[in-house]
Length: 110
Length: 111
Image 1 (tube, rainbow over the protein chains, first blue to last red):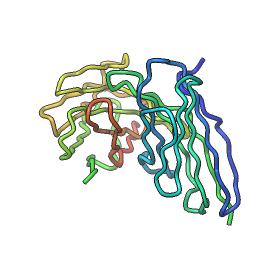
Image 2: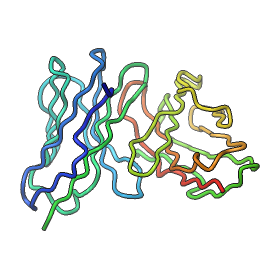
Image 3: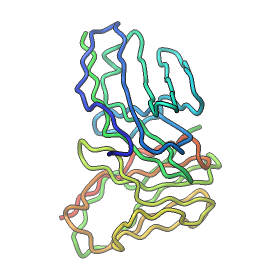
Image 4: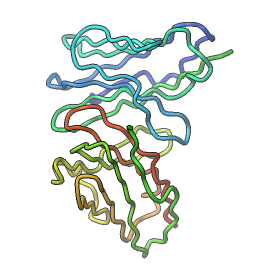
């Protein structure tokens, strides 16, 4: 079992729709969770961080965490073509040991 | 300011060369990281420095040698690399256990 699992996609949504990205992790002691966006040829850019169960909203982005189910998700509302990128789920296991999922490639079609 | 800088942006080196990658941050972060990323793969953790001490070494070959001269600087010394070491090398920094901020990366080609 991989430490962090994501659907690799590609995920395609029309402009203005909601994009839903999912992630599961295997280590129950994990405490902090992150979503990064990575454009082709660029470095990962932090989108959201979440540390406690529930929802966290920032603009068009909402992260959801359920530690009992070991599940993290990212919703992108009103998706724009500029949101087309690879989205990486990252889980901090302990002592700064962060692991990434394989990434989900999102395409937003105009 | 959440900027992490890396130099050089691109590096081409032969298998007998010695070179160094440099990373700098001025956010007061006390943890710094090196990652390796191959095309269409996620970043893979190589080394972690916490409070200027090496805390994680992910069984990286000795031809990669990290150094943390002070809390703002991180180096990766390269020696006798192989063509399969060609990748994007990413530096990141954070407060311990909090979100990491990545630099733009150094694209390394080993010939």
